[in-house]
Image (cartoon, rainbow, N blue to C red; front, side, top):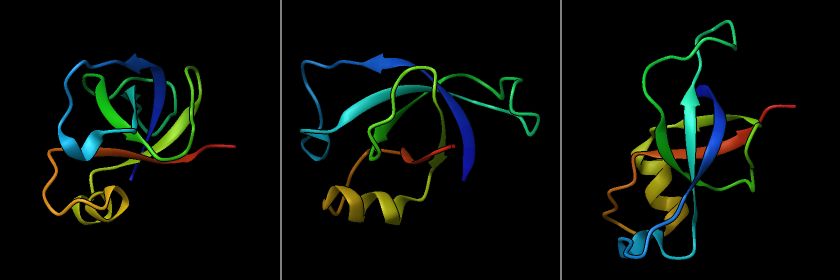
Length: 85
């Protein structure tokens, strides 16, 4: 699990079947200080209803993502699992 800042949304005219109906967010992972970027922005499936400017928790846990999407083989790597208060 890692903290990230939502910097935008992504739209796609063609998606893998496992992503149908899910919102895609562009998130910037953050270092432990909560301000400095940690690498390049990522695209994550949103399971929380987060929006631009919010700090979220992301995970690359494939098993949890497959269960969330109810799809046994998905190309999704990152999932938003929480919003920081």
